[in-house]
Length: 363
Image 1 (cartoon, rainbow, N blue to C red):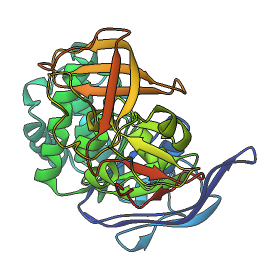
Image 2: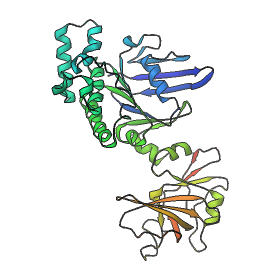
Image 3: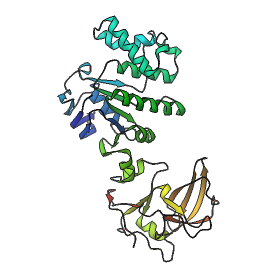
Image 4: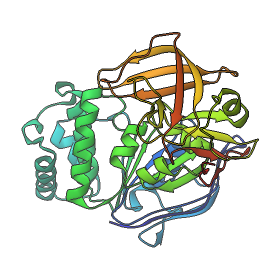
């Protein structure tokens, strides 16, 4: 395993910047996830590290050794792609050992390395099959095994699970986490799926338009987003964003004052932290005492079995908001009126530029 450092990286295509003065480090032995929307530069960065794209500026080092000028085979990294890229005429064993054979290793060494990795990946019975005889999950294991046998210092994964069905993605996430624990090798994983990012990453780097918006543990990004982009990207349904003026317009009259905030700010509340008042006949929802009540109207309700998503619009502005409720809570009727309150301490505030400000206090 080795530390991966990226300093001052620049990359442009036809004069259009894709990465601009990017600085990022991945700790030795860490499982780091690059996440962000399509076109944000995360896969380009991975290809730059692998040596599949040329740098326009800056440098990359692996284990303290600059590698930005080296060919891919000399960088100490191995990459697993979204497409399995297996040779159809070769067996699983031949596919896995191909890189070692090209490096001049003896047949006995190649067989031993392939057998050991196949045991780790639990694909030993598949070694004599051809790719056409494998399922999608099995093919992806072979592609991962081909990378492991090279014993790289850094593993690079470029959306390796996106071609698999939902159930198999869950299984493969678990297997990748197990592999990291067993191998202890530095791993960098690119995805646009926030669930993969939150469940796999020891740290997450959230990309947007060629820059890193925030780096940290999954929970730190979720609970303390640095800006509105981070807050809106992580979480499903996404965080509710309510302009200060819209909040004021929807505020119910009465003795429950709202959070203090600047008049040009935007308030953010996650769906699970915006609760209806009085649906169960009680005077309010737990944890919302002292919070501002907002008047809204139910637009529609989604039943997902383990949760209810209530979509509503705020009085005065029509600003859409979503609530996540437990499945055993009373279901408000479409068109009915709601009084909503944020859970105490769970209102985020963003300035006009989108930067997060200190949490607002209740007055």
